[in-house]
Image (cartoon, rainbow, N blue to C red; front, side):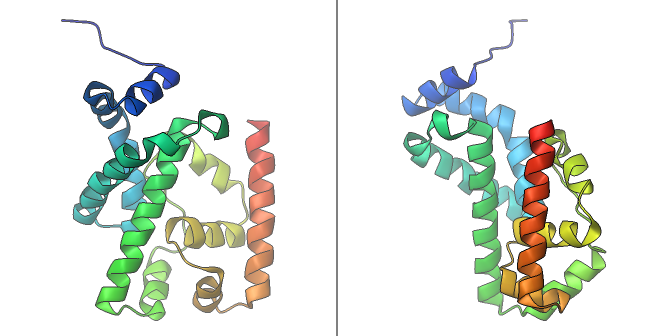
Length: 181
């Protein structure tokens, strides 16, 4: 058996920017489970999340030149692509099927407003659990479900200003918690 090939983040980025299929294969093999988890959390359908995963990697391949190592880690950049792609898919599907916000509200009620992360190895579950229930609900709706503040206001039947305040407070608290890690 040969030794497992590993790359530093800088080597991986350099290989990807030089369009190395070997580096891209390594990226897919090592990061697809986590990115699939992000897509699945947003979409909540394994088949569609699998399709979205392919789109995520196409976007990574096509836009790797725009990745700036000085602005953040490669994994964080890829998670943002995964999340945004999944939300775009969710919104597109919702538009085509004519889903109404009430259906989203009932689906969220069935989840009992609990944040479940499919990519628990990121350690985000413990960080988000430190928020109060109201803040966790808003972060879940905004970040994982892709809802706007106006949609959150309607779903939760609370004033828009309250949504904005809770979201701002949650983000401030998350920053504080993450700085302590």
